[in-house]
Length: 489
Image (cartoon, rainbow, N blue to C red; front, side, top):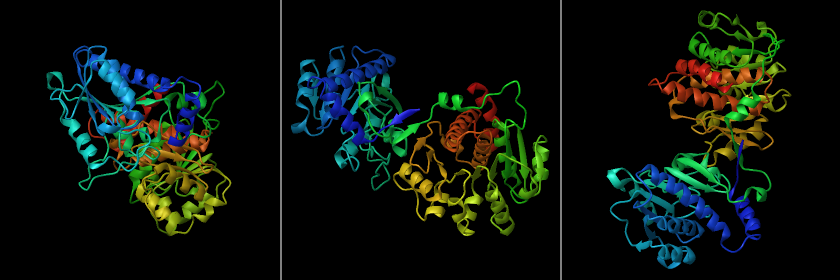
């Protein structure tokens, strides 16, 4: 996993590292890495020599990084123009280096720009861009380079204007981000939360981490960790010569109803795609489930299902008295459970939430934002990581807070973010598939946080796979899990 660090931790690490280096050496490292990435982008656009670069430089070290990078590019034959947001407070050494290399300062952007370097404000910024800077950032989409193509926007460390520790993006009165929208962000030394979570992650574009020697100086606990495919592959249960359906794990699925049989079919499909050897279904949609999935053992009630190693409950279950009774039966089983959709509503309306805190076996809940609000009385808000961790601590459960960048929070304060999310998954039934897959991973023996992280990662990949064929439906996502898992191994 890749670690993600808060601003205070990054600042402390920078201070420790700088104490061992000559003055200005750390900024030179950052600027060299930034210039190298910009040169590669320019090479893809027709060449470095003769390209036109606009540097937007604020008053802090972020502006200094951008100016020094501009100087590197100018020495390679790039026509570099700097636009200073606060001319009297620009980084003096960076500005002198740019001018010495042949760069120039202007009070307006040139007509032709191949690449824009966003060095307006870095990790010390708060509250979004001020009006003038925001208008300038919004105008970047109109910049054109050689051949009339749109200019590439490269953010220095973070897109200017985002809330670095939370990923929140302030908006103007007309709903426009008060932040820069970058195509590429070159991060120095460590990933920051705004690059991987919340609406800011979308503004960051492609993120490249440039090493500047900071890693040994990063101390304490990271804000969160980013799931990677190697993690999922390492966690995946291995088959051996003695494996059989019961040793691989048995997952119980208590979902769907006569009104919503599709939820049962989809959650069972997700479970079948996972690593367990057997799926037991319990519910009133057993006829439809058996028609679609004849390998499943189906019964009408949880009490009649037989032994399982984990339960999935809630998708399409309904919220009546019979559904509440089935949820109570699931919670009474001494095995891990996944609670989704209607099960979350029943926790609140049926006053069953107190049953979770005294439960010994693990629990994973999978709310989207509105379900989170029903559980907590308020929406997740600007800090989705903190929101997931609050709910996890209160419920004594692992929380999989669904969204474009799904966040997983644990009761002991650890947080993970999934990088494979895609908006195409915002369609009915895809959450049912996710819940089934998650239950299968729990039944196979994965720890709850690993099961949640792996399920979110693979579900996102399946959504992207399904989108290659056009508009996506939940059955498409369930079917796409199989090729995704084949590539995993």
